[in-house]
Length: 168
Image (cartoon, rainbow, N blue to C red):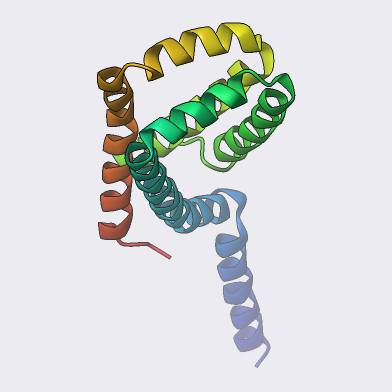
């Protein structure tokens, strides 16, 4: 009787030790959480890109006037920079994965680009930003060329996010 109970206790101890070991627990959590986070963020960023690009293209003239007004207002530039840095930091801290496939890589790069863009808005003077960005946006052909990367990222992330299967 004693050997039977002792054997069960040892078996239970080994099972718990294997399932709670830091390496096994961390690896299991990374495999379960990160793919679903990648899929969620790819869907979110992809749909966001598709929606904002379509709105900017449909209302091109209004978008250029709105952006010009924003770039000439230091208070709005500061608020935009703070919000964009916050969003970029959130993406970088939540999803800084460089080796789990192309979808994860694109989500990570978008996070870093958002962080850099936010820092740009925080530290660049409004006059410089207005002069540089408005020179590009006022030309109709360049406006549409500038929308192509966001549109391509949006299509890729949306497609990849909705066709991928979650592991969790």
